[in-house]
Image 1: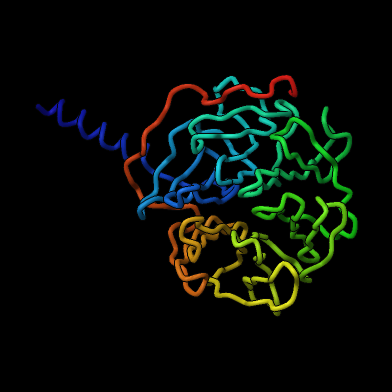
Image 2 (image 1 turned 90 degrees about the horizontal axis):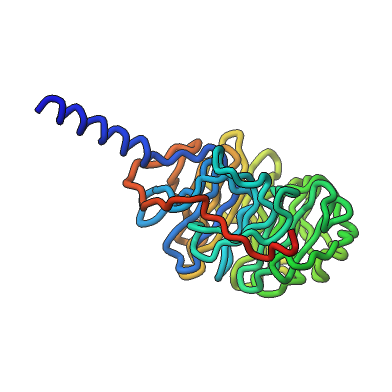
Length: 312
């Protein structure tokens, strides 16, 4: 009887330990296409916020980088989980089932794209490449319109400052924005030439799914700001932010089925949701700490499928 009770307690504690979701890092932020799940890639797999509860997503606990969701897929890069036996780094990955399994698209074993973005409806993928590889002759901005089969360089003329993040228009694969230490820059020719939309250090660029506005975070007079600007310029609107102490917004995303709902994640791993178009915010994670809930399930194996192997 006592042994059975002890065994039961051990199992319960083990289950709680497994269920705990901690955001060791935050490497991206996106809603699922049905708007039901907020997905956050961290150092050990994918965290999910759904129905006001946190859980670990089914699938391998890889270190996903450059994470970007679209209406059909998730694109990512990064590193395999320890002991998985997979080639490091991943290059470009694509998931068709919410992160349970992943297709290897290109540049396996060659590149890890920390800065990457994908168009919500176009699936255009832009990356900032840190060093040359077999498909990219130099570092810099590149894009693919065919899931990594071909890559084109972007000359990025007039772009200035240290890069912080990239965003691409939800519908137009040729329109993208880059946040840097010197401002927010927009290009309408696949990154050939940029013009400045906002000055000063900027973060977390994001094209609203209406395709008409772009958001970004920044600073002014020591105060943190969240700004929405028409992509044609002018008419900038300052929106509310939660109090951030020695922190900054790193990622911003919008719910595709409830478009007044937005989420932000900060560099210090705080996560907030607004359901009233950034007028007020509810905190759902603090310094990476979240609720304890039952896991949604798990799958065995490494969860990776080979696609476009002729390009790797």
